[in-house]
Image (cartoon, helix red, strand yellow):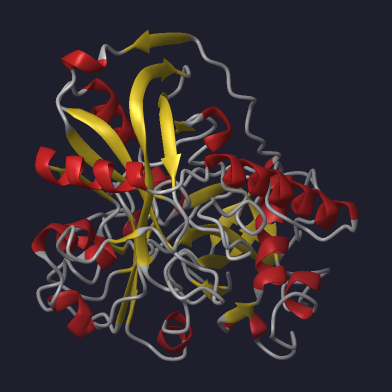
Length: 430
């Protein structure tokens, strides 16, 4: 896992200047104006930014890129760019890596800031991040996408232009991407002075106009930023609490299947989630469940749970252990036989008898679905689902070995924390 942080948003050269950061550490993400006349929306007023822009700029169309659904316009996390060196850095990322966004923000407040990390003049702050759903797409990649995948980018600023002009395009995983409520400071005592996140954790020297450059982070640096975001935001995942259960009569269920994606742990030869690097919680095999601790493609899981036609939830991942023959391949590694639906209050979880197999005995996703590189969920017909179930049932079920491995990875994570190596909390799902 690695990451890049790139500068976005309005700056001192735009009408109205930089976006604001307030006394309590909250801020507003202010996109730059759109310079392509074929794009007609959104405006600063549409994004409820009219009050912090000059009157003359309220109806100015903005280049809403990156696209954060939290702002209220758009449904997905997308970003496109056509300028080097940003595109060069984006091309170095891959599926599952992190793309951080940072902006320069002006302090706005009648009194001194409530936190000492807020600069009283201006500073650079990380305001959000994407977990990449796919590898970054070139212009040719985008044009060759299946239509159902291409639609996921339909509201991106570069796609909405009359002529598509992005050299690099990315999509954020909906459960692993967010616009922060409280940003991460990158500036020290002054806006131009870089703090430890830049000088110690990134590959940048922090000299000169570092706050305009893309910043590269290795695994440890990425962990430090993710942990800092949760510390500043004080975000923790609550212990899972089952409010109610609905038991299924399997005799009344039909035999269709559904695919469900998760991030594999590069620290393990077993097909288990990435606990150490990403703090992933799903699939939560400790309870033989999916979406038990946090959301992961919740709409898809909810539909699966409520559908009498779908019985088997097939788990698949991209093998991240470079020592294994299957490294880099997308493999189906087992299934959950739907037994009950759990109401977790803010989400629905599914639970059932779980079968897991080794990567050696897993099934290549190629040949099962079209465009396997872009699939995260897909319905499988009864014939295909039964063929997969019959195959897995003939293999050794290594669920207990995987449970032991999960506990080992949890201990490894605690050891890192004990040694004060920053790691993200378990706040994300798949």
